[in-house]
Image (cartoon, rainbow, N blue to C red; front, side, top):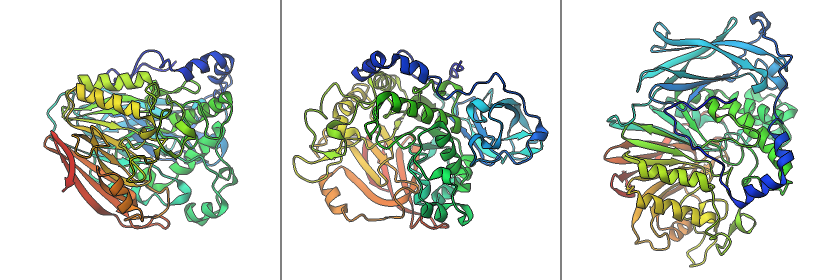
Length: 545
C-alpha cells in the first residue's frame, strides 16, 4: 500500500471529482478498471535479492535526483540501469537490490546526517525513492547512493525554510518541454550552473513520438545509431520506461537534477499529445486509452523524485500538491490533464462559444479546483504561485472582437479560469503568479480581471516558459510578434528561443529573467538574458527591469 504523505505536505484528500465523464467511466468500465489497476504489476513471488557481485556493470547510468523538499525532508531518487536501453535495465525481470544512501552537510561526506538502505525492486523498474526525514530547515545537503562496489554521482539538494519563517528571497528555475529528437539539452547545463533554490518543471519531460533514424543519429550520444526500440510511438509500460531512460541518459539533464531539487508536474506528452482525462486525441476506446495511461503514469512515478504517496493506482495518480517557502511563497502545483473535460469543438484554435464557455466544464476537475481556491483563502504567503501546464491568460489570434483561441489551454475552459480568479479575489490575493509551459515560446502576461477590457484591473502575472529543446532552434522575434501583441495588449514579452526562466521572489517584487540560447540543434550554445521584467508586490503588472 502507498505510504501516507509526509505531515508537512498538504495534498488533496477525499473522493475523486464526480464529473459526468468520471461517472460514465465508473459505470461503463468497472471490470476494465479493476484489471487496469494491475496492468503494470510484475508478479513478485519469485523475486530474489541480487548479490552485489552480480552487478558487474555500473548501475547508476541515469544519475540521481532530489525533489519535493520540505523544511525537514526531501526525496532522493535514482534508478538502477546497467543497460538502460534494454527492457528490464539489464537486470532480472523479478528481483530486488539493496541500495545504500547517505546525505551529508558537506560534499566530501565527512559529516553524514542520515544514512540507510532502500530496496530497488523489479516491480518498479529498480527505481529508488527515499523520503529522508529529520533534516534541518533551509540547509544545503549532498547525497549519494551505493550498491556493491558502485557509487553514484553526488547530488546537491536543500530543504526549505520553516513554515511562516521570515524569508528575504527565493530563486527558482522554470523549465518544460524537452523533446529529445528536436534539440540538445544544453539549456539544462546552464540551468545546473544557476544559483537556485529549486527548479519547477511544468510538463513534457518526455515525448511519446516515434524517433526516426535521422533524428536519432543526429542527437544520440556519439552519433551512434539510436536503438530500434525508440522508432515507434510509446504505448506500453516497457516503451515508456525506455523513453525515460533515453532522456535521462543525457548528461545535461543529469547535471540539472544533481544540482537542484525539482518540483515536477506533467502535461500531455508524458502520455499522448493533447489527451484530455480519459479521452485520447486519436479517439481510442476509453478502456484501451486508460490502460495506456496506467503504463505512462507508472513510468512517470518510477522516474521522478516523488514520494510514495504519489505512486499511481492503475490509471489514477494524485499529483497536485501544495508547498510553502517560509512566509514568502505558497506553491500550488496543478494537474490540468487527468481530470479535465474533453476539449471543446474538437480541439485546436477555434472561436469560443457555448460549448467552450459552458460553466459546467473544467480543466482541473471540481475537487482540485476547490482545493486550489481553499488554499488561496487560507494562504498567508506574500506570493501565491501556481505552477501548472498551459497558458492561463487569454491569447487571441487576431484583434477582432470574435477571435480564435486555444481549446486546449485555459481559454477553452473559460469558466474554470473565471472561478479561480473569483476565488483569488474573494481571498484577497494581491500577488498571484501563474507559471506555465507547453507553448514552446516565452510569454510574460498581466492577468486581467476582464481580458476583453485592457483598462480593467491587473490581478496577477503569468510567466510562460519556452521549451528546452522542443521546436528546434526557434527565433528571438517570431514573425507574428506585432499581430500577437496587438491582439493581446496584456502581453508584455513574447519570444521563441529555447531556454528557461529564472524567477526571483522578494517581499518587494518579483523578477523574471528570460534566459535564451541561439541554437539547440547542435551542442555547446551559450546562454544570454533576452529580457528582464519586474512586478511589484501589491501592484501586479510587468514592467521592464
